[in-house]
Each structure stands twice: as structure tokens, then as C-alpha cells.
Image (cartoon, rainbow, N blue to C red; front, side, top):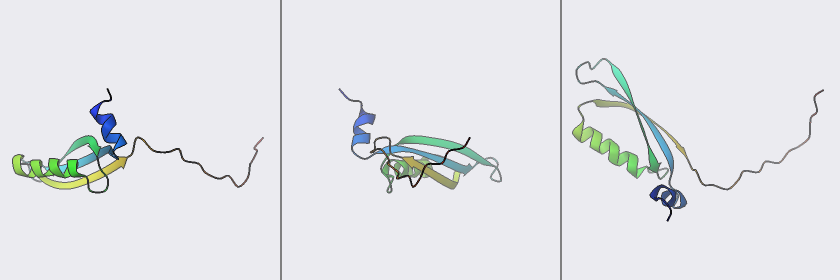
Length: 89
């Protein structure tokens, strides 16, 4: 039986990593980093948006910046045409 993560990948989900910079409640001038990673759908990112809504509702640290990286884990191979062959001795 395939895992839930594998089923998500087949349905178009890809590994998503978000670097979240937030302000500490006790020292608002200080930024701290949190890294979130899960399978999510690009470009809407429903899982990430759900997590960020939870963050804003439940965690005191104010969000500053969210940087997102996404990669599909199951995709066809890439083929590139070669214009020539160069040999270096």
C-alpha cells in the first residue's frame, strides 16, 4: 500500500520548503528563522496558507517574510538538445 506522501506526489503535490522570518515577541527588533517543509500544491500552496493562518492566530511572533521553494518530486525526465560536441585535451 503506497504512503500518503506518495499519493500526494502522484496527485501533483511537490515538496515545499518555506523559510519564515518572524519577530520575537520579547525582542521585536530581533528576527528569528523557522523552516517549514511539507508536500503542497503549487502555486496556491493550501497547506502552507493553512499553517500561516494557524501561526497568525496562535503564535505571538509577528510574521516578517516568507520565502517559498517548491520542487515536484515526480516528473518526466528532461531532454536537452546538444548543438555540438567540444573536446578539451
